[in-house]
Figure (cartoon, rainbow, N blue to C red):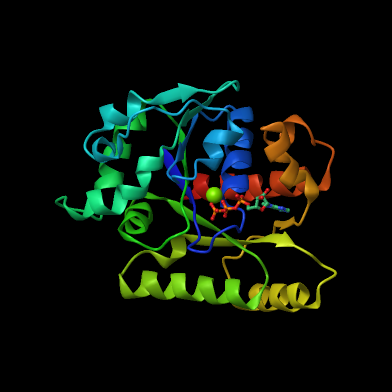
Length: 249
Ligand SMILES: Nc1ncnc2c1ncn2[C@@H]1O[C@H](COP(=O)(O)OP(=O)(O)OP(=O)(O)O)[C@@H](O)[C@H]1O
Ligand SMILES: [Mg+2]
């Protein structure tokens, strides 16, 4: 079982759009997949129209794998299950800070899913916190959407530095270009700079596209309503690269 985290401390960069589409591609390829929506905003949960629990259950999340398993729901897609978010997940950091081995709790509970899934995808909230450290320790790959702008480049540098300072495996950070607008000079310059400096930057680049925005209207992954469109084709290339890297890891 592999764990793929869609992560950036920057908000609104495409983590959820990528989590949802990667989960769909994986499931289509016959990979038994669990998407875990760790963000109290619950955007992945919304895209898959998954039911959220009424009562808060954040305190039980990191205690035992069985607590997670109880809340897993199937989606309308074969091979794809989801663990819906809850607003109470906003307290994850507080809960974790009172626990022993607070940096590796996620890794421990996810191990339980080994027998059920080939792939776990984590849709992460935009923060760099104790929860994020749990994600860094648990994931085989941290897939980082980077909008080619100065601030996003800086965010990626900060993440690389954080990994170095905390002796985390920098090689697990895998950035890709997100929401690219080729007509913009800044996007062009920043993309070139990132290609020159980031050796792990993936070849696939996701264009800015209204089709991705329409996922919210349809509550569906791109493959279900835009499979002949450019955004879908680029996401398919992204999935292929991610899959090959995960296979080799
Ligand atoms: N390639 C794209 N082209 C155009 N719009 C996009 C693209 N990717 C995502 N969006 C839109 O941008 C917004 C933010 O995307 P998304 O929710 O995937 O980002 P996020 O990083 O998960 O955000 P958050 O940090 O709030 O969780 C959404 O409205 C989404 O529809
Ligand atoms: Mg999101």
